[in-house]
Amino acid sequence: MILSGLEGIHGCHVVAIPYPRRGHINPMMNLCTLLASKGLTVTFVVTEEWLSLLGAGSGSGSGSTPNIPNIQFRTIPNVIPSELTGGSDFVAFFEAVSTKMEAPFNQLLDQLELPATCIIADTFLAWAVAVGNRRNIPVASLWPMSSSMFSFHYHYHLFVASGHLPFQIDNISEKKDEIITYIPGIPAIRLGDLASIYMCKNEIMKIVLEAFSWVTKAQFIISTSFYELQAHTIDTLRKTLPIPIYPIGPSIPFMALQDRVTPSETRNGSNSVDYLKWLDCQPKNSVLYVAFGSFLSTSASQMHEIALGLQSSGVRYLWVARSEALNLQETCGEMGLVIPWCDQLRVLCHSSVAGFLTHCGWNSILEAIYSGVPMLTFPLFVDQPPNSTLIVEEWKIGLRVKEETGVGKVVGRDKIARIVRRLMDGEGVLQLRERAKTLQSSCQRAIEKDGSTFQNLHAFIGDLVRNSNLEFANERT
Ligand code: UDP
Picture 1 (cartoon, rainbow, N blue to C red):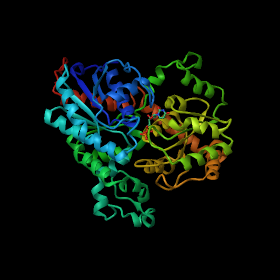
Picture 2 (cartoon, protein in one colour):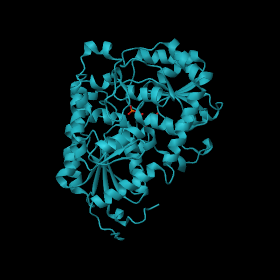
Picture 3 (cartoon, helix red, strand yellow):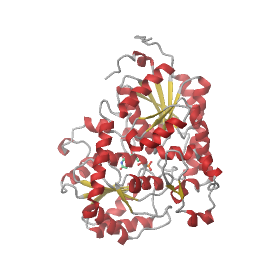
Picture 4 (cartoon, rainbow, N blue to C red):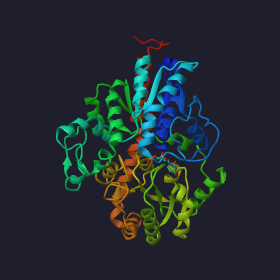
């Protein structure tokens, strides 16, 4: 459907530049798919390497350009460490993204046949806001995490003023249960939940704070959340921020899911047929899906404990273990299938899946909420500990497996087995399942034709068209 009364959108050319990691590219792609479906022209900019990864539709491998109507792909050279070999040094990767991508992006803008009328950039790419400001092109900053994380970062100075930050490594254990209540839009947050963000290497924090010093120099902020999920936080941010924020989520590929044919016989690609067929053969609501996102890993000893815990739980499970898949399959026995990668949203929506053991990446959470699947939380890093608190304490749609922050603390097999059984069979979790279904309904309502997501999408497009000073064929004033 093309928006009526906004014929100016045909002259609107959005150039989108995601942070070059799967968990950021996916929501940017989903946002662009929505914009393209409304008639906007979109150019999606990735590195050469990422274009081939996207074509392959997985975390690895090479393939051809994805084919999405109204979206064209353009590349910049591989100026950052390779996703396949060099991506694990988080600091070096973040630094390269912050310093090496601007110049080729600028060149690309110069070479576009159709000039950009809007840049949509990941919030962590502060330089993209500067590029837009210099060129007089409006910029929308896409925030790919929870709205509360936005508020934490935006209000970092309040932590400093209260003397809570920067953290001292030696006193965090005694302070970790202190509750902070002065961050606007966040009722309460445990100091310990923030430890892995604010104690992470200074270089990262420096870049993140730099990004936040630029965020309100953009013209718009887009959130990958849906309004009802964090309404109070969004309302508060709307009052606080000098520029508008539009929650246009969940930025997950739900439209693609609705378009797909589902019977397993009609699915292409032997790998995907294998795990989907396996799911088809399992009883309804019997499988735990296990995945830790697209790039973080936990320690080898922790993986081993998880494998043994899952095995002794007696629960059926599908585990995405990326490069560890082959090794782990041997340990896992008959009840589990371990694979390197999957179509996660489709798996979560499968009728045999009834639980998700997750590292609490924001996209994974949105996908679980969309699917109505309760979670076991195993946060590792950055925003994942506070996300785990949202799941367990605010929305009450999950149980905590990993209490302590940091990859070093190993959770033993017995605890894992116990909590897995509790989620999958436990009578005490009926309410938790009901709440997951209630939140799912609220998510479904948000993405109905007149739901909050599409209202916000239309508002953003309208404001963008006005901001871009485009000609309206149907001038309304
Ligand atoms: N994902 C996927 N298949 C997998 C594992 C992950 O498609 O087997 C996708 C998942 O759907 C999500 C992204 O990878 O869109 C992971 O993002 P998230 O924010 O959950 O975690 P991150 O990888 O950024 O830590």
